[in-house]
Amino acid sequence: MALLELDNITFSYAPEEPPVLRGLSLSVEAGACVALRGDNGAGKTTLFRILNGLSFPQSGVYRFDGAEINRAYLKKQRNAKRFHQRVGYLFQNPEVMLFNASVREEIAFGPRQLGLPREEIEARVRDCLQLLGLEPLADKAPYHLSGGQKKQAAFAAVLALNPELLILDEPLAGLDRKARDRLLGLLLELRQAGKTLLTATHDEALCRALEARVLRLEEGVLREEP
Image 1 (spheres, one colour):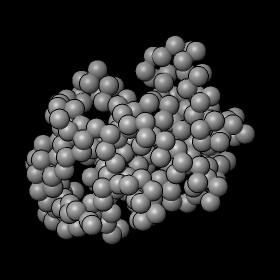
Image 2 (tube, rainbow, N blue to C red; image 1 turned 90 degrees about the vertical axis):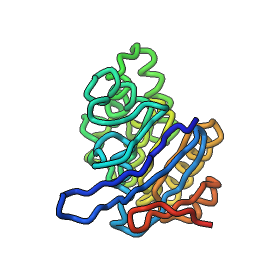
Image 3 (cartoon, one colour; image 1 turned 120 degrees about the vertical axis):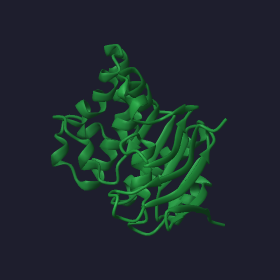
């Protein structure tokens, strides 16, 4: 069974506006890696918002692990908590994700919301700082970081929840070479560990490195790319 399924999704931001997504369908198996390409404004971020339960289509069905994801489902706190633990979302603009006093607190925030024991939270924070090379910045306020450092801190906060599905909006954009190489290596490790990856990217090298199934979002529908 597919981990996520979109069946005939249509979405428009206003009734009088043309749909951004038009009868879009998608099926992604657990452990798969899918790269989403498309021009700016094609609807990639809109699609990602639907997949993360932040927006809801006017028609069609979204299922995650067999459960239909809609307003009624996510209105139940238990469902929403479990869903957002299993699905991790790295926004294209990481600043909207960062609101704590330090990088360390950002990484710890999600595990605290899950009610994990203090020892487990500390272990996850330590591991994520190391994975992203953020140890020297652990006690620094996020608003003092560079754009690339903010993206790495936001990604560390996502990883701290240990999600099954990682949805990444332009994960390598704005990174210097060293940070890019580190993050690419981490994505390869996550791929090999069986995580499901869905990334929006203009980066052909990233698609090749991840051996991703490449889809293009165009005119509101998805098409396979060679």
